[in-house]
Image 1 (cartoon, rainbow, N blue to C red):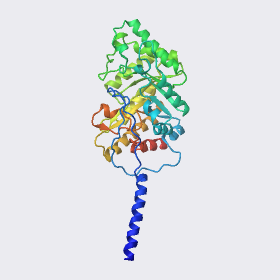
Image 2: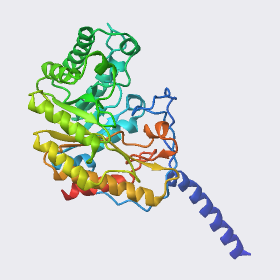
Image 3: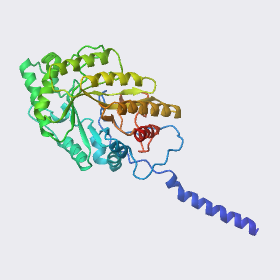
Image 4: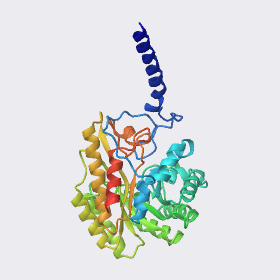
Length: 383
């Protein structure tokens, strides 16, 4: 009987111990923010939602103080992420992770035309100012995104029938006002975004129809006049490797360079998936030919989406793709920045645009690093 009492007492103590440890073993997820507006099918801030991820093998243990940022700075390169204004303001862990891991940020939405110039006589810079202030407080560089695009324009721009000179003046005033406000505070601008269609021709946009093909040169000239020290980029998707669209992008920027237009680089967006992505050697060849024009090349918007349900094999393949593309970038002297389109799956545009796809970034919804994080870390450590 005494033995039974001892066993019973031991079991009670064990149950109490396990109950006390449960919160530590299973930390609660971050509080869900207030619902965000539904987004249009472009890379913009989504409604946050906890997304299940696959069970993973244990992560490597990092030495104290080691991060993507510390390793990138030791190599004199930029590692960056697009930033959503809402969580930056409302969710402390978002800003803490951003400042710890990255030395560059891109304005995901708050510098786009509809955000800063909602009507002809009104500019709204509060959200963009907060983002630039955050970057300066944490010794980060800013990539401005984007001055000229066919999406996320306010109705007053797209609904009016413009005369050429009138629309040219609108565009020049917009660029000079936005770039001028952040003169000396934004290191690089995506001046023109996605002007080439998938078939290699100039995309039909309000700018092309209202002004003509020279709207591109006009935009670069206006940006350069507003901030002569800023690096000015042409930015596009599906032009990372070699092919019809990347050839068209090359021909466009080659013409600009030859005519003395102030363009300094090309941004390769790199929105890819575990099953569809450019070959590293073709990305390297494309970077090489752009570099031969005297241009810098930034990877500007990388994410690697996975079709649900995510498996550990998917995560390993995703990590391999991230690592390969960073490897290519680090091997090219002209590739000075590697920027992700977000950094946590808690805030990603992918689920809202690609139904059934998810888990595209390097941190999970609870801000835990995924295999892709360690792949980037390994590439930076080995450079």
